[in-house]
Image (cartoon, rainbow, N blue to C red; front, side, top):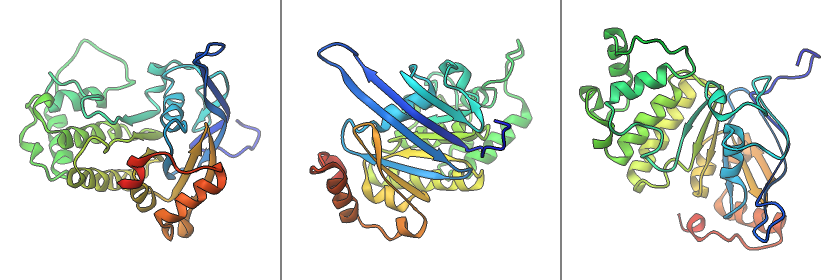
Length: 272
């Protein structure tokens, strides 16, 4: 992109994705999705069931190919790259605390794997003393007592502890883009609040660009500098800065009804 065009942290250009095309179960998941993220943008994404929120994150991560359109991360067109080749640009935390870590491996081994992601593999495996010290320092900031449990198997940790470790792992290499896919949905409210506060801290301290899918409208308003609402595979509302900070849940509900011509069909989102 050397023609003087602006380089964005992420650019989605006219992304289309239809599942089960030509069958009775055909479903248009992304319908000409366009999005540009500036460096350091922290965007929260909300929308009803089937709006295309997680589908958008999966498209960026390369879980499956898109039908058409371009996905550009930090000026690099990754549209045709397979998922494992995109991993060096991305950090990702999933809804299920069991995903994203190897349960039978220790905390330090999981962190070492994350630190080596996208680098050349060698036969030399093992966690060095320097690495141990670095991981202990990082775990200490979580305030969960995990710095004394480096050799504990990750499978023995609680859901909140696992999500906290996964967040550290996802940000270890300072990815171009951090994807948080309803990463607090499976946690109790108190733990979810702690993991969200930790997410804010990690994103801010590392100056990361991040996208967070959430079903909690309050969280979507409170966190990040920008909020987008999706409906039927496209963005119907995009707000940032001071305007975003002054939003109320009722504003979002009326915005949704106005843009979609229907009621917001997601009880979980309204109740939370």
